[in-house]
Amino acid sequence: MPLPYSEIVMEHFRNPRNVGRIEDPDAKAVEGSPSCGDMVAVYLMVDEESQRITDIKFESYGCASNIATGSIITELAKGKTIGEAKTITWKDAADALGGLPPIKTHCSVLAVDGLRAAVENYEERHGLVKEREATTVEVIKKRLKHVMNPVVGLDVVRTNLVKGIEVSDGTVRVELDLREDHQFAASMSEEIREKLEPRWDVQHVEVVFVG
Image (tube, rainbow, N blue to C red; front, side):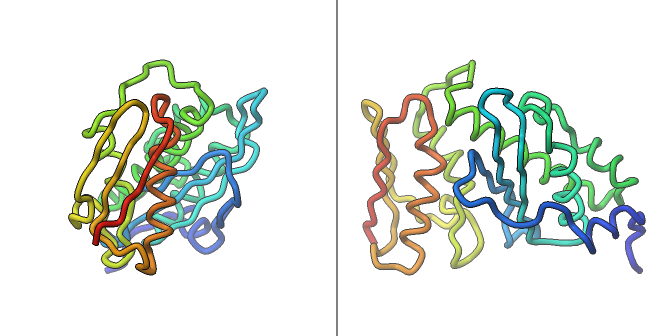
């Protein structure tokens, strides 16, 4: 039996707004995983003086609700300050879409998580984080859970690719159980750096392949 999607959901699914990626964005984030069925990436361009989001795009892997919520989130956030964008909730997204089936509520949560993570990424890159938590091994593990192992579509922590993490005097060293010439080694190394380098107390990130 088909899910009772609203006309607004179907419109955003068939004609999603702001689809694609921004090259060299001011901030970006990826939430979810293809292995779980849904994933969304959010890219931001922000006017540094006004702190307003001047451009926002998303990429989605998943169902109609995932695509529609990614689309509506970008519409809700564009033109807002990063502070205002952080206040957008999953209920705001669902209401703007005319409601979602209860079984698909997680899709709006995922889109909002992607937006908030992108805003957080911007704040870290620009030194706007007020409460500065020290970078520890646990903090790094949490960040690495958002770095995908493209071979299986799960993160590098759950697939046991992370063999060692060291933090010392502003330097973070991450050891991966992967060959340096592996087809995904370069992209995974870049993604790890993107997740860790914005941290306020991280000066250098070293990714070592030990496979």
